[in-house]
Length: 110
Image 1: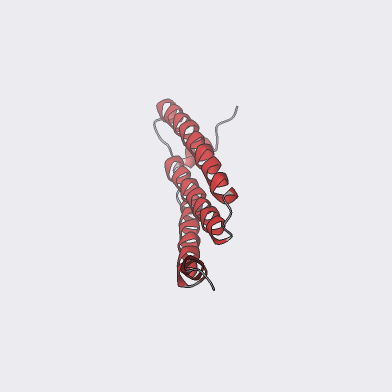
Image 2: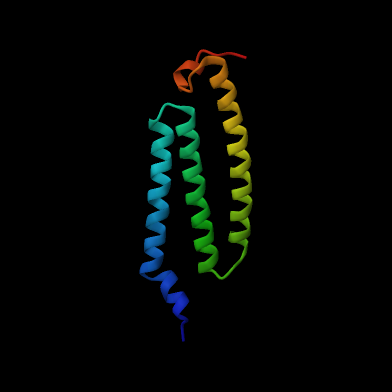
């Protein structure tokens, strides 16, 4: 006898979750690659990290194991630290040059 939760996770709900993960990751990757401002690139990385988190939680739930959810919490902490450091760097660069375009910083050295 299978549980209703198992049927939901492995049935259409599982396909829907993986489709959402795939779309979120693609949007994040496209944002990172195509947009040429530091803030947009940081937002693209965040979208990709959130897609990975959703994937970790889904598979942890699928296998009835809590390790993926714990790993997801650690990824949230790393993402929060990354945003804090990234925005601090972006603000510092904006104060120095007046723009956050990537083209400006390709000539910077040092």
